[in-house]
Length: 304
Image (cartoon, rainbow, N blue to C red; front, side):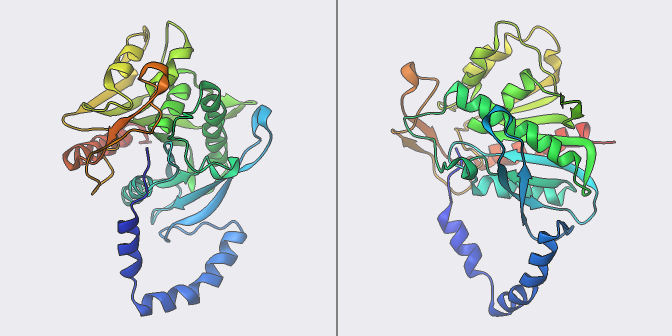
């Protein structure tokens, strides 16, 4: 789940002094013209872009996204797919880290174009919803292949919670090309993924991409045992899946500054009938370990 951290956003906004605001107003028209012209600016602050999709059987539409470019391009690209609460501070924080490591980071908003804001409640996303959203991963891979700032076929995607479950559908049922066009995905990182979405994939599974799965030992929303049961059905290439379980960590262990609390109104696929309630909240030690694990994993799999 991605939860907005309003206090953090307010603090960031207040930190801008008047001189910085003046420079922003002077630069804004220039930046706007460049973006309209389709020119991405390496090293600049985040930029708003739109990922073109053909929508598959569900019709064509664009996906809004935030683009974070490193100082040097073209670069390997990492696309981030949010959880049930939409794009959160944890997603953009990760994008900033990726940018600092030399990757182009793309935070994809899967909800706005669908008229959604939050699907964390009792009407938890269905398997059919997840299958539709998996098309966003396909479309993003194709779109990245066309961008001058992205190195071809050097992409990874990250999925959080519900987005991690959707990502799992592509890890275990990968579309490496669409209409003879390569998607470019080389690796995946799934962060406390909803492994319940993998139950419909069959009795015997095979991963198609090197994948890092990062989970909290105390997660009762997307529990480790559910993912372990899923991984037990992998009979070939099990070594492509790298798992890290962080002790004393709940769901959303990367929601820095958020104390662990219980939400009684959220859907929970791991409970009978898919309802209801789960704990979530930060664990800084788990977050730091996750960052180190992710950095090492991407360095191994997105290297030339």
